[in-house]
Each structure stands twice: as structure tokens, then as C-alpha cells.
Length: 441
Image (cartoon, rainbow, N blue to C red; front, side, top):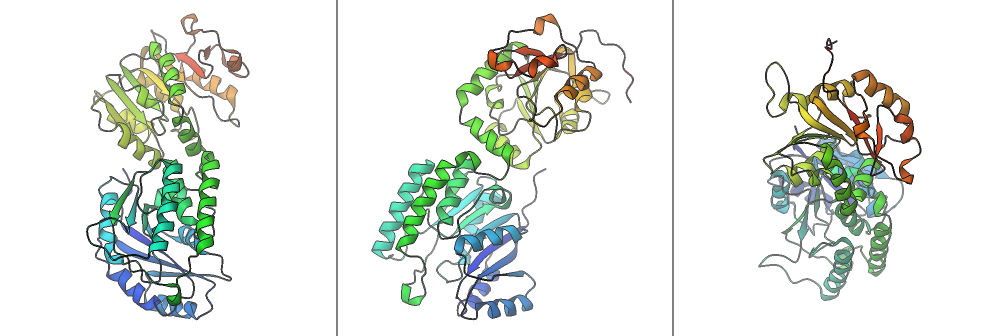
């Protein structure tokens, strides 16, 4: 079950805004949304007494979480600090200068609550009625947005908007490094690299001038372009999670995954269980099976699986192998669904304890267990052979294939339980057609 969205974390970077803090705080807590509100205020080394105002506001309201930087580090650094301290399931960035109105939050929140979006941007350039904005500021903004769209393959109208509302699990998984206003293009680029569903909604905007304390300047436009180049060059490491980086990178090579699926299909049959389905990189090429059960333990990946494949009547998605046993189509009170093949992308690690034995019992006699990716470098590879053998799997001549030169290395040491096969990262084990009686432990 997906986590309930109960709390909105408002991430507010502050630098010398003492005269607007009380008013923006009042507007934040008066916003007409259904979620409880947590206000994470990061004072970025203010010198005008802002910290004293923040401290007084926090003392009067336990929903305010005050944090202070000893020196001025920049908006990006303050936002990253706020991300590290938030506890909500959804987050929104809120400047303290009254340019953006929290009364617009309901329309930003709606696509996220409905499950349509991972992130929603509030655009100052959408809608029928809006205040006329400064020409040069608008021109530079649109130029940077155009550059961002070219890098991310999105069609945003306002990339530089402060109002970016993002699911917390997505936001906290991103690798963000910018300390300056370049956090805006960096966050946009990382969301696109993650594959997030991004929506735009119109918002109100009350611009202020430099005489009133506006801080963004011409050099910030140059830094924004630099951030776009840097994030584009480091797209393979867009996230803090190596597995997510790997899955998204594999997803950008559909031909290779399609070739792997073609190599799998002769061994599959109509009923297939895919363990460690990830974000559907390989699973999307197996949807022609009459019954396809996908098991993925990571909530982020599972949500993308639901978005990609959950609408198909022949596809079911579960979070654990034990859930697959309980929810498989056709399972009865005294037994469980027997699959013709189990495709395994993650043979150990996050799977349930005795996964090899559970896989053995889930397979129909003669069914195949197919490993489509080798274990991690630190895994005990010989233990995989022993574990499958102990569960009752065997290897037969009908599963033998000549491996490519790149497939040799440690894979050959797994025989006879595992067979080397084309392509190089496909290994096969088989459940005997006649299985001896096994007493359950």
C-alpha cells in the first residue's frame, strides 16, 4: 500500500526578510488545503534580525521548524537543508518575499493527490488574467526556460518559478548540489531525468523590484545555464540511489531490453512472475503474456510500474514475494498459482528470506527460473548456486546455450544448476517435471 499523503512540508529559504516573515507565515497557515502543514524555515545567514523574528514565530507555533546557517550560503543550500529536515509526504518551495501566494497551493496539490503527478510547477505565464510582468525579467526567464526544455525534453512555460511542489520521496531521492538560484534548473533537470510526471498550473505572482529587496541578478542566469550543462552531463547519477540510476539508464536503451525479452520468450510460457521488476524496463516487453505478475519492493519504482503497466488487465503488481503468493490470480485456499516461468532481475538482497524455496514452490513442474542480471559485485556468487540447488532446482541439457565471450567469466562456475545462455546475462535453472515430496519446514 502506498504511503498516505498527510503532511505538506513548506521549504522556506530566508535571507534578510524580517519585515515580510510574519505576513508570509500567516498566509502559509491560512492556505486552504486538506493536509497538515509543516513550515521548515532556513535562515541563510541573515544580518537584519530575521533569525530573531523566526525564533519568535517558532516559539509561538510548534508547526514551525527553525534552522539557521551561520553564513550566507545561497538559496540552493537553504533549500537542500530544508529538504534534509522535512517530514512531510509532499513538499513545496516558498519564498518569504510575498511574491508567491500560498492560496494557490490547492491547485498545485490536486494533481499530486489524484496520483497524476509527481511534481507540479506553478506557472506565472498561464491563465487568462495575470499581472503584466517586467519585460527584461520575462525575456531572460523565457530564454532560460527554452534552454531547460531543450535539455530535458519538456515543454514548460516557467521553469524558473519558485512554486515547485514535489512528492517528498521523489525529492529526497534526487542528487541536488546547487547552492545558488541554480537550484531551480537543477531540480527541474533531475526530475526529468528521474522520469517524474510534471504538471503545470497557473498561479498569481506579485513581482517586486530590486529596491524592494529582490535578490536574483544577471549572473544567476549564467549560473542557471551552467547548472543545466552540469546536470545534463551527470544524468547517470541523478539520484542518491545507485539502483535507481541503473534502472533509468537501462530504460534509455529499449533495443537492448527488447533483445533480452526476445531471448527470454522461448522459456516463458503464458504465466510469468517477474521479481525485481524495477520501473518496467524489461517488464514492458513481456506484457503479451496472458498472466504477468510484477514484484517490486521499492515504492518509487512500484509507483512508476503502476503508471506504466497497471492499467492492463493481464498485469498485477505486488510489493513482496509473499504478496505475490497471496494475491496471484487463481490461488486457492490450499495452494497458490503455479507459474510457467519466474524472471528474476534481483536474485537476492531486498527479496524475502528464503526466496529460492518460495520460487521453487511457485513454479509448475518443468518451469524455469531465469536470472537476467548477475548479482552485485559483492554478492557470494557460489552461494547462489548452493541456494538454488538446496531449493530443488536442477539444470538439464535442454537449457544449455553457448555464451558470448563477454558472458564467460564467473557465470560458468555456476553450472550445473545455472546454464550460460545467450545473451550473456541470461541464466536458467529448471524445476524437475517430477518433484519428490518435500515436507514444508
